[in-house]
Image 1: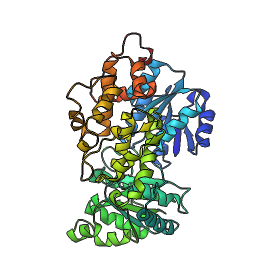
Image 2: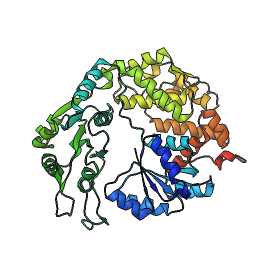
Image 3: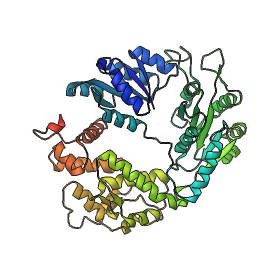
Image 4: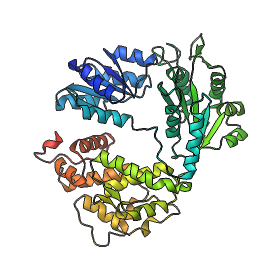
Length: 466
């Protein structure tokens, strides 16, 4: 975790920095927006920005957007002024942290940003075999190609390899090749000089240079345009890059890891991926098995995600009922670990006791146990109970069908808004019924407002809405 502090934080820089350092973060400090942008362009890098609200936070957010630097910004200021916090959030800050800094609050912010872990949760022999191979090759500098279906944990594996390599103390930089347009990906990877194209207001260090000395992950590399594949091949072969608009080659020292959810040999045969690049990347290959072939991992992962989302939502879950594990093991898991994570997140939100039971499990279809066969109607009762409502006669069988196909976010949003309506807008009562903190509820409602959903107005005299 790399933390960049911008501004004086009203004299609390030292305290905030010490807290972050004690939680394992690498901390850097600059005085203003211009210095912050210079540091980021020059490859200093950051995973989170803590920004003094006495500075122009709107300018900082706009500068990051203009130069396509995706970083969460947390505003910091004295006290808990509602007006100051609202102004910062409206400007684009992800959160407002009052000063003097609270150790637990800063730890929670850092944990939220560093949610991705390099620790693998596994018990199944199929995954143990893959991890043994990963442990063998991690200490080398060999390029590694990680393949597997979407949701199997390819990026987590890449982080695991980095953390077990001799470069573990250096940067781990990730680029999603599928998420960045082809005309911008070249600049993202190799950087650019000032004036190289419209919008290039200053020199920008690319991901190759930012990862210098560490590991660069090219996620979903099979989506990369063939023109860029040629430039990438030279960078891998010679460890030299050319910034867009630059005249001097730049030497880099990186360990390259690439991932794909496609059959790479098939992509080569079709002519969409260069064969020479494929062989350069595929010095070592790791294929992650789908979750349906790793039944021994399901219980361990379910417990991990249950604990994670129970803590995130302020819910007490002491254990998972054995019949829940049986249901999960019978499911197909076409979405792999990501689908299981969503299922357990949903279950935590719907659970009615400190033992997570079958009534909270809403599966998303497949050839496993059909949703309708798992105690029909119980899910609808659970949702209604969460909102303090009764289930209308004849509605129990229809409940699950109305939820199947929805994302976890949609189910959560409907549950929160329905509960708030039931409480006539009283945030305090709604949070108590939902089993979440007032702060979590406020953040969710802010998000729904920004996304255009109708949120019930605050109830009269509800101090929690302030």
